[in-house]
Image (tube, rainbow, N blue to C red; front, side):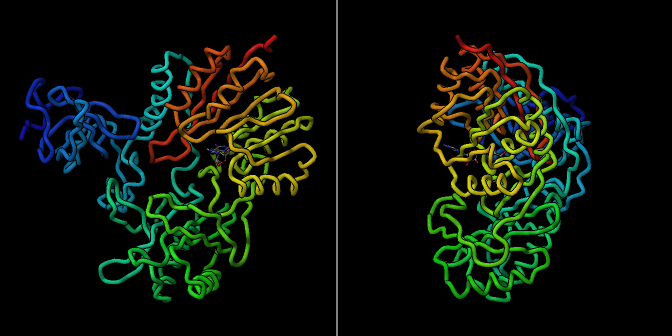
Length: 472
Ligand SMILES: C[S@@+](CC[C@H](N)C(=O)[O-])C[C@H]1O[C@@H](n2cnc3c(N)ncnc32)[C@H](O)[C@@H]1O
């Protein structure tokens, strides 16, 4: 065990370089020198990089080494005690969080001062670009609210040792399910609905995990008006139980509709089959920017509507002059519909591989009088890009991993007439990889703006603008 006094200066390790490499089980005291892009503290110990979740730069912490990489000089430790707080740390008032003495690890950046967390997110984008040999000025915009912003929650259904059924989330790097009742980042009334559903599960003596058949997960989606959709995800749906659950859930204040889907898989994916509507509302309506999106509990939608609204409006502002716009990976249509709301002469084609999302985008377009100018189609972009007239501008918002090869190739091709490309992304690394390929195909990376979509987490969302001259 290597230890030292607590009055060492931040920025250097308390362990001599060249000392014995770290070993799992070892307990030591270190000074945290930096943050990585997962909001973990980093110390250098004997030439090894020690990642310490829930630690902040300048902290002096006692750490238990939990895992050591066999391939790289790096290890992960568990913070046992903060012996001295550094300047980057702030007080945490959420008693459910690990940083506040609880067991929930859902907000790994909660203990970081606002400016420090923002800079960590901005740097994640800058460093991803630098790693690809690209330079761009990157700004970051804070979120309007750091609590009560999250419009969707996924809960794991569990039974405690004393037989009480509850809803929770996995503790970090574990299969232990921690109760999430009262989670402060959730939009009202999600915490109250979660508690009422737990009571209902107990009243109905509902079979839940780890029983072989029963409720596995619950998805909740809320809108700003407080309407909530519930989707129960079951293994081996027992129809009478499912119906009883749905009917009684409708009595919970705020619950507007209930859906169910089946998941008998042994993997970790939560939603593996199309959901069916059981009772009440089929969708909720949520304002994003200048339009109302239609959402059910299961489809993808940006979790922080205030920040997503800013991003959609900013993207729409960049599309002036475009008459044909493609929105690739359109989801329920947030970018496409905001572009139509802003530009009365523009037409949009939106595509996504999820039929439910496309149907909701189409319905929202119809309801708001955009259907003449909006087409939404189901298309798997791994296979092809849309046919038909080439756009003047393209908006893409792929999953974290980045663009599918077919999309990248189409954007790089001279046949693509577009001269503006907006790229919205939650994955700086995948984005930067794509950006490098686009730049080598003649696109100019004009600017990159980042937003703090999920305060308290390490998540950063970015909007990049590329231009190019019309290919001849
Ligand atoms: C980050 S979300 C963006 C959705 C939307 N732009 C928004 O702001 O809500 C990524 C979207 O890509 C879709 N997607 C993932 N893989 C796809 C593929 N191979 N082809 C088409 N769409 C895909 C998902 O269904 C999801 O709606």
